[in-house]
Amino acid sequence: MARWFAALGTQTYQGIDFGQMKAELTWINAGPGIVFRGPDRVIATLTFDFDPQGRITTIHNVANPDKLHAVTDGTRHQLT
Image (tube, rainbow, N blue to C red):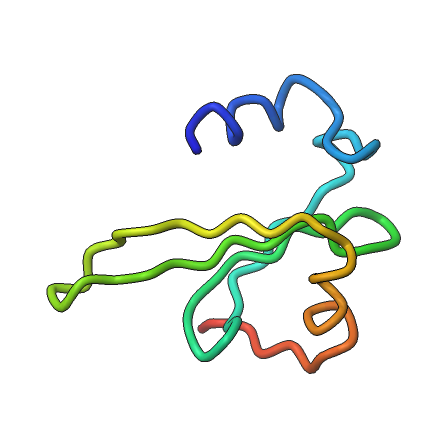
């Protein structure tokens, strides 16, 4: 995952330059997540699984446009 984040700053991701991306903290599937947006679309999401102590055990990266419709079309609730 660290390589993925590092690569975002050095090359395009799905045809979008890093400078054009925005990352938003939000709720996805009733838990905290991150939505990455380009100028005209959602690019990817990150969601997390947690253990009983609240530590992240799994990071899920979804970038398939067919699976991002719910995020793109749904109501956004930002974390505060």
